[in-house]
Length: 519
Picture 1: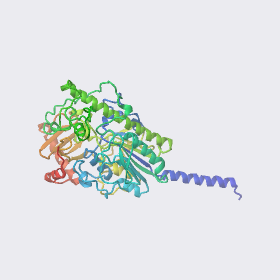
Picture 2: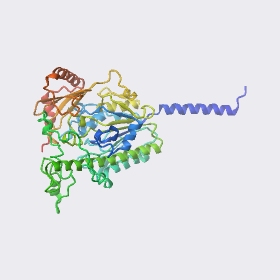
Picture 3: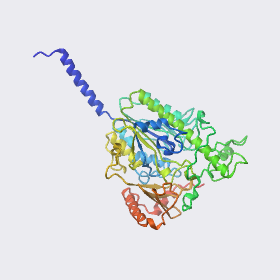
């Protein structure tokens, strides 16, 4: 039987085509992990809220439109460095050893982290932007991270550690971070490998310095005040009432962008800049006082904060456009999150730390074309110990037993599967600096929250989030909830055993006392 040359060619082309299809199906997904610093979910227009019209975030919103928005993502320890350590290791602070920013130990970089495992599995890995863990990153082919101000970074003309070398850069940090990330994708990575890029911004962390083009972004518009702005902390006097993070009393001259007296420089200027952090009286004029001053401070704060978010959103857009233009969108998982939540005037505050909703809740949006339905939402309870197992699972890498989180890939359907967690555990350690927030631990379920503040007080707080969503009334002593609270204490003890946080209160206090930094 004769077989024509044309038939043979078609047959070989068919085999080649089938192999290409199989290779494409087996191709590991790229991972773009985008993390802001101190970004409140309330500042993202996809989450709704007070500022969705006046300060939209169209590029972050694009990810929500093309992916999944998570409404119940929470952190285990609401402070920058510790949350980053939890995300990297999939372990709570008491196991990864990074408890607090002030007076804590450097991150143990010998630990197992998801970037290390991805690198071992053949991924090209990089971290660019903010690191804030005081030890050199491991598990990355390339790193370039802020080193000014104890790795907190600065907004203008920052210094970076680039693969072990100190490099001074000129420009605005948020835009520079975008430049460096795109440069790594375009010129520095091994393009024969899938990539995992941790794209991590300083913004919108304090002192909320906008880019020059956004200095007057909101002009004379009056920004709306949160409904709890004038919280008087009744029933929470020893906890919420003792903080040093009220907008009214604890923003500094530097935070408020006030003009220093002429001729001030050096140490005197540095001292003037921080006036206000201990509650010193600060005002732009001799006549602006009282309630009017409190409201003026909020307007200055919220406008600067949201203006830094504008630059962040712009640079999210830049990298999404890069993926589009280089045929990378289809096979790239994009995760957008923050290290924790933040207060935008709720309870009269800025900052984070508390187990209350605004700082406990993390923004989380994931786009994964073909795996996640565009415009979908999940109300499944996700905790930041879950991030590492999820990314490893999506990359086809075995999740080590030491990681305490669980892959939440099953939530991508939009349904919460039977057996998925219905409560989460929290533990915060740093005290008194910064902001005088008492160490505490607690449990949150879909409806209730129980918190124990323990360092030099012994105070329990309980909230029914259904009847008191703003957590204004501590109902711990309400007889109506006696049985609920008893059950919650049992569940709390079970979670502490599950996550191996079974230290005594004295041992917990020792963690806070070690290296304690006071005002």
